[in-house]
Image 1 (cartoon, rainbow, N blue to C red):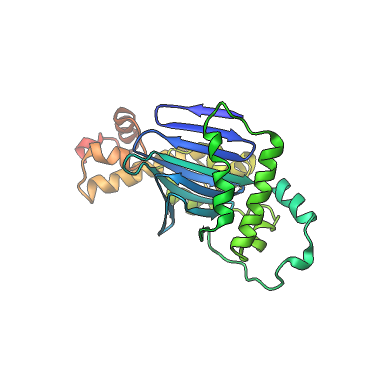
Image 2: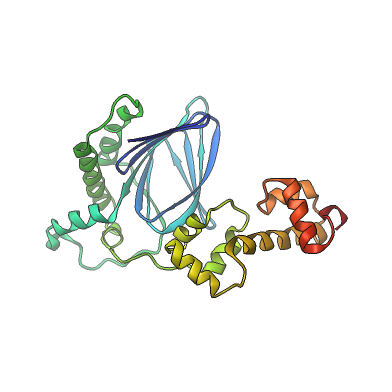
Length: 275
Protein backbone atom coordinates (compact mmCIF):
# COMPACT_ATOMS: atom_id res chain seq x y z
CA UNK A 1 0.00 0.00 0.00
CA UNK A 2 1.23 3.49 -0.85
CA UNK A 3 0.01 6.44 1.20
CA UNK A 4 0.54 10.00 0.01
CA UNK A 5 -0.46 12.83 2.31
CA UNK A 6 -0.01 16.57 1.84
CA UNK A 7 -1.86 19.69 2.94
CA UNK A 8 -4.41 19.28 0.17
CA UNK A 9 -4.45 15.63 -0.74
CA UNK A 10 -4.59 12.25 0.88
CA UNK A 11 -4.34 9.26 -1.44
CA UNK A 12 -4.42 5.60 -0.54
CA UNK A 13 -3.34 3.08 -3.16
CA UNK A 14 -4.11 -0.62 -2.96
CA UNK A 15 -2.91 -2.62 -6.01
CA UNK A 16 -4.92 -0.75 -8.63
CA UNK A 17 -7.55 0.76 -6.32
CA UNK A 18 -7.02 4.42 -5.45
CA UNK A 19 -8.90 6.41 -2.85
CA UNK A 20 -8.37 10.17 -2.86
CA UNK A 21 -9.55 12.86 -0.46
CA UNK A 22 -8.90 16.59 -0.96
CA UNK A 23 -9.08 18.71 2.16
CA UNK A 24 -8.82 22.04 0.33
CA UNK A 25 -11.55 23.48 -1.85
CA UNK A 26 -10.23 22.55 -5.28
CA UNK A 27 -7.46 20.68 -7.03
CA UNK A 28 -6.58 20.54 -10.73
CA UNK A 29 -4.58 17.69 -12.18
CA UNK A 30 -3.57 16.27 -15.53
CA UNK A 31 -4.78 12.72 -15.92
CA UNK A 32 -2.94 10.36 -18.22
CA UNK A 33 -2.61 6.66 -17.75
CA UNK A 34 -1.58 3.72 -19.91
CA UNK A 35 -4.48 1.73 -18.42
CA UNK A 36 -8.27 1.99 -18.33
CA UNK A 37 -9.73 3.65 -15.22
CA UNK A 38 -13.15 3.57 -13.58
CA UNK A 39 -13.82 6.66 -11.43
CA UNK A 40 -16.52 6.98 -8.78
CA UNK A 41 -17.33 10.15 -6.86
CA UNK A 42 -18.15 9.52 -3.22
CA UNK A 43 -18.59 13.20 -2.30
CA UNK A 44 -17.83 16.65 -3.68
CA UNK A 45 -17.65 17.33 -7.42
CA UNK A 46 -15.37 16.27 -10.26
CA UNK A 47 -15.12 17.85 -13.71
CA UNK A 48 -13.38 15.91 -16.47
CA UNK A 49 -12.26 18.06 -19.39
CA UNK A 50 -11.66 16.15 -22.63
CA UNK A 51 -10.65 18.51 -25.43
CA UNK A 52 -13.72 20.79 -25.76
CA UNK A 53 -16.06 18.59 -23.74
CA UNK A 54 -16.71 18.72 -20.01
CA UNK A 55 -18.16 15.82 -18.05
CA UNK A 56 -19.37 16.64 -14.54
CA UNK A 57 -19.62 13.98 -11.83
CA UNK A 58 -21.65 14.51 -8.67
CA UNK A 59 -21.67 12.30 -5.57
CA UNK A 60 -22.76 8.78 -6.50
CA UNK A 61 -21.85 9.13 -10.19
CA UNK A 62 -19.31 7.13 -12.12
CA UNK A 63 -17.27 7.38 -15.36
CA UNK A 64 -15.02 5.08 -17.37
CA UNK A 65 -11.86 6.61 -18.90
CA UNK A 66 -10.14 4.64 -21.62
CA UNK A 67 -6.39 4.24 -21.61
CA UNK A 68 -3.78 6.31 -23.46
CA UNK A 69 -5.68 9.57 -23.29
CA UNK A 70 -4.79 12.80 -21.57
CA UNK A 71 -7.41 14.79 -19.69
CA UNK A 72 -7.71 17.65 -17.25
CA UNK A 73 -9.56 16.97 -14.03
CA UNK A 74 -10.91 19.42 -11.48
CA UNK A 75 -11.65 17.88 -8.09
CA UNK A 76 -13.71 20.19 -5.90
CA UNK A 77 -15.29 20.24 -2.50
CA UNK A 78 -18.98 21.12 -2.61
CA UNK A 79 -20.37 23.02 0.33
CA UNK A 80 -19.13 21.26 3.44
CA UNK A 81 -18.52 17.99 1.57
CA UNK A 82 -14.85 17.30 0.83
CA UNK A 83 -13.88 15.77 -2.47
CA UNK A 84 -13.63 12.00 -2.07
CA UNK A 85 -13.11 9.81 -5.10
CA UNK A 86 -12.38 6.17 -5.74
CA UNK A 87 -10.78 4.83 -8.92
CA UNK A 88 -10.10 1.34 -10.19
CA UNK A 89 -7.24 0.83 -12.66
CA UNK A 90 -7.46 -2.20 -14.94
CA UNK A 91 -4.06 -3.29 -16.20
CA UNK A 92 -3.65 -5.52 -19.23
CA UNK A 93 -2.67 -8.56 -17.19
CA UNK A 94 -5.95 -8.50 -15.25
CA UNK A 95 -7.97 -7.94 -18.42
CA UNK A 96 -6.17 -10.69 -20.35
CA UNK A 97 -6.75 -13.16 -17.53
CA UNK A 98 -10.43 -12.18 -17.35
CA UNK A 99 -10.80 -12.52 -21.13
CA UNK A 100 -9.13 -15.93 -21.23
CA UNK A 101 -11.75 -17.29 -18.82
CA UNK A 102 -14.77 -15.74 -20.53
CA UNK A 103 -17.34 -17.70 -22.44
CA UNK A 104 -16.62 -16.14 -25.84
CA UNK A 105 -20.13 -16.93 -27.07
CA UNK A 106 -21.43 -14.36 -24.57
CA UNK A 107 -19.45 -11.56 -26.20
CA UNK A 108 -21.67 -9.39 -28.44
CA UNK A 109 -20.73 -10.11 -32.04
CA UNK A 110 -21.28 -6.77 -33.77
CA UNK A 111 -20.32 -3.71 -31.75
CA UNK A 112 -18.85 -0.65 -33.41
CA UNK A 113 -15.77 0.58 -31.59
CA UNK A 114 -16.54 3.99 -30.10
CA UNK A 115 -14.10 6.89 -30.38
CA UNK A 116 -15.25 8.34 -27.05
CA UNK A 117 -12.64 8.84 -24.35
CA UNK A 118 -14.94 9.18 -21.34
CA UNK A 119 -18.12 7.18 -20.74
CA UNK A 120 -20.39 8.48 -18.00
CA UNK A 121 -22.24 5.44 -16.68
CA UNK A 122 -25.87 5.33 -15.68
CA UNK A 123 -26.43 4.76 -11.93
CA UNK A 124 -27.09 1.13 -11.07
CA UNK A 125 -27.21 -1.14 -8.01
CA UNK A 126 -24.05 -2.88 -9.28
CA UNK A 127 -22.08 0.38 -9.33
CA UNK A 128 -23.37 1.46 -5.92
CA UNK A 129 -22.61 -1.96 -4.41
CA UNK A 130 -19.07 -2.07 -5.82
CA UNK A 131 -17.98 1.34 -4.60
CA UNK A 132 -19.86 1.50 -1.33
CA UNK A 133 -18.02 -1.67 -0.32
CA UNK A 134 -14.72 0.21 -0.81
CA UNK A 135 -15.54 3.33 1.21
CA UNK A 136 -14.44 1.82 4.58
CA UNK A 137 -10.90 1.79 3.21
CA UNK A 138 -10.75 5.58 3.33
CA UNK A 139 -9.65 4.76 6.87
CA UNK A 140 -5.96 4.08 6.33
CA UNK A 141 -5.88 1.78 9.36
CA UNK A 142 -7.91 -0.75 7.41
CA UNK A 143 -6.05 -2.44 4.57
CA UNK A 144 -7.76 -4.80 2.11
CA UNK A 145 -5.95 -8.02 1.27
CA UNK A 146 -4.55 -8.64 -2.19
CA UNK A 147 -7.32 -11.17 -2.79
CA UNK A 148 -10.01 -8.62 -1.97
CA UNK A 149 -8.55 -5.95 -4.26
CA UNK A 150 -8.31 -8.49 -7.10
CA UNK A 151 -11.94 -9.52 -6.58
CA UNK A 152 -13.00 -5.87 -6.61
CA UNK A 153 -11.23 -5.33 -9.93
CA UNK A 154 -13.03 -8.37 -11.39
CA UNK A 155 -16.32 -7.03 -10.03
CA UNK A 156 -15.50 -3.72 -11.69
CA UNK A 157 -15.02 -5.42 -15.08
CA UNK A 158 -18.39 -7.21 -14.76
CA UNK A 159 -20.00 -3.91 -13.78
CA UNK A 160 -18.58 -2.16 -16.85
CA UNK A 161 -19.67 -4.89 -19.25
CA UNK A 162 -23.18 -4.88 -17.81
CA UNK A 163 -23.35 -1.08 -17.96
CA UNK A 164 -22.38 -0.51 -21.60
CA UNK A 165 -21.82 -3.06 -24.39
CA UNK A 166 -19.57 -0.56 -26.19
CA UNK A 167 -16.91 -1.29 -23.57
CA UNK A 168 -16.37 -4.90 -24.70
CA UNK A 169 -14.06 -4.09 -27.64
CA UNK A 170 -12.35 -1.34 -25.63
CA UNK A 171 -11.59 -3.42 -22.54
CA UNK A 172 -10.34 -6.40 -24.52
CA UNK A 173 -8.23 -4.60 -27.09
CA UNK A 174 -4.71 -5.58 -26.08
CA UNK A 175 -2.86 -3.67 -28.78
CA UNK A 176 0.03 -1.50 -27.70
CA UNK A 177 -0.66 2.24 -27.29
CA UNK A 178 -0.56 4.28 -30.49
CA UNK A 179 1.91 7.09 -30.92
CA UNK A 180 0.46 10.57 -30.69
CA UNK A 181 2.06 13.20 -32.94
CA UNK A 182 4.76 14.86 -30.86
CA UNK A 183 4.45 18.38 -32.24
CA UNK A 184 0.67 18.36 -31.93
CA UNK A 185 0.99 17.30 -28.31
CA UNK A 186 3.76 19.76 -27.40
CA UNK A 187 2.10 22.70 -29.15
CA UNK A 188 -0.97 22.05 -27.02
CA UNK A 189 0.89 21.40 -23.77
CA UNK A 190 4.01 23.59 -23.79
CA UNK A 191 2.72 25.74 -20.90
CA UNK A 192 2.26 22.82 -18.53
CA UNK A 193 4.85 21.53 -16.09
CA UNK A 194 5.52 18.05 -17.48
CA UNK A 195 8.58 15.85 -17.10
CA UNK A 196 10.13 14.15 -20.12
CA UNK A 197 8.90 10.83 -18.71
CA UNK A 198 5.33 12.17 -18.59
CA UNK A 199 5.47 13.53 -22.15
CA UNK A 200 6.79 10.18 -23.37
CA UNK A 201 3.99 8.32 -21.60
CA UNK A 202 1.28 10.74 -22.74
CA UNK A 203 2.35 10.28 -26.38
CA UNK A 204 2.47 6.47 -26.17
CA UNK A 205 6.24 6.09 -26.06
CA UNK A 206 9.00 4.85 -23.82
CA UNK A 207 11.42 7.59 -22.75
CA UNK A 208 14.10 6.24 -25.12
CA UNK A 209 11.66 6.15 -28.08
CA UNK A 210 10.44 9.66 -27.27
CA UNK A 211 14.00 11.04 -27.33
CA UNK A 212 14.75 9.21 -30.58
CA UNK A 213 11.56 10.44 -32.27
CA UNK A 214 12.12 14.00 -31.03
CA UNK A 215 15.54 14.13 -32.72
CA UNK A 216 13.75 13.58 -36.04
CA UNK A 217 11.75 16.80 -35.67
CA UNK A 218 14.15 19.20 -33.93
CA UNK A 219 17.86 19.85 -33.42
CA UNK A 220 17.04 21.14 -29.93
CA UNK A 221 16.64 19.01 -26.84
CA UNK A 222 13.00 18.68 -25.69
CA UNK A 223 13.71 20.98 -22.72
CA UNK A 224 15.22 23.70 -24.94
CA UNK A 225 12.37 23.32 -27.45
CA UNK A 226 9.82 23.90 -24.69
CA UNK A 227 11.61 27.00 -23.39
CA UNK A 228 11.89 28.41 -26.93
CA UNK A 229 8.20 27.77 -27.55
CA UNK A 230 7.20 29.43 -24.26
CA UNK A 231 9.32 32.49 -25.05
CA UNK A 232 7.87 32.79 -28.56
CA UNK A 233 4.34 32.72 -27.18
CA UNK A 234 5.31 35.20 -24.45
CA UNK A 235 6.64 37.59 -27.10
CA UNK A 236 3.35 37.41 -29.03
CA UNK A 237 1.31 38.03 -25.89
CA UNK A 238 3.48 41.01 -24.93
CA UNK A 239 3.84 42.53 -28.40
CA UNK A 240 0.49 41.83 -30.04
CA UNK A 241 -1.86 41.38 -27.11
CA UNK A 242 -0.33 44.09 -24.89
CA UNK A 243 -0.36 41.88 -21.85
CA UNK A 244 1.65 42.56 -18.71
CA UNK A 245 4.83 40.67 -17.90
CA UNK A 246 3.49 39.48 -14.54
CA UNK A 247 0.55 37.88 -16.31
CA UNK A 248 2.40 36.44 -19.28
CA UNK A 249 5.21 34.50 -17.63
CA UNK A 250 2.82 32.17 -15.80
CA UNK A 251 0.48 31.82 -18.79
CA UNK A 252 3.27 30.34 -20.89
CA UNK A 253 4.56 27.97 -18.23
CA UNK A 254 7.32 29.77 -16.34
CA UNK A 255 7.12 29.49 -12.57
CA UNK A 256 9.71 32.13 -11.74
CA UNK A 257 9.63 35.72 -13.13
CA UNK A 258 13.39 36.07 -12.76
CA UNK A 259 14.03 32.91 -14.78
CA UNK A 260 11.56 34.12 -17.41
CA UNK A 261 13.22 37.55 -17.69
CA UNK A 262 16.71 36.06 -18.00
CA UNK A 263 15.65 33.53 -20.66
CA UNK A 264 13.68 36.16 -22.59
CA UNK A 265 16.62 38.58 -22.69
CA UNK A 266 18.94 35.79 -23.84
CA UNK A 267 16.63 34.93 -26.75
CA UNK A 268 15.50 38.43 -27.80
CA UNK A 269 18.34 40.65 -26.61
CA UNK A 270 16.12 42.78 -24.39
CA UNK A 271 14.13 42.27 -21.17
CA UNK A 272 10.42 41.54 -21.57
CA UNK A 273 9.54 44.89 -19.95
CA UNK A 274 10.89 46.69 -23.05
CA UNK A 275 8.58 44.93 -25.54
